[in-house]
Length: 180
Image (cartoon, rainbow, N blue to C red; front, side, top):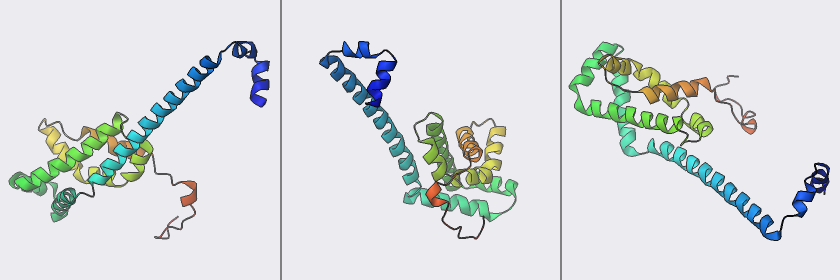
């Protein structure tokens, strides 16, 4: 009723009265198609985001991360780490695959394939932490004119630029560390 009163006030009522039932049906169908397209795109983005999250549960990726983590923890000296990676082909492969996965996520994030809000929630703190730990390697590769890690860097910066905000219902959950 309120809608009809508003339409009468706006002088659209005369135009609406001229519509035939088939015009109304076509308009409703067009709106339903548009809503379906919006829903399909949203579902695609959600599925893509969750698919990338699932990648990190793959046993091969877990083994790759374990190898890279062991290498990162092996010594505090970046120069020694760079020498070590030059000698170890398996480690090079694991690191390059890991950088590739992070770069793929960054590309998908950049071009809107992923749900940005969900991707930032899922990959925080994983992406910024790994980017910080691997920055020395990325910079060493770039110094050798190897184009590596640009979308990885972009994703890490985006996640840090948009701090994680917990949904209202989760804010009431006490922090297990006792921090505010």
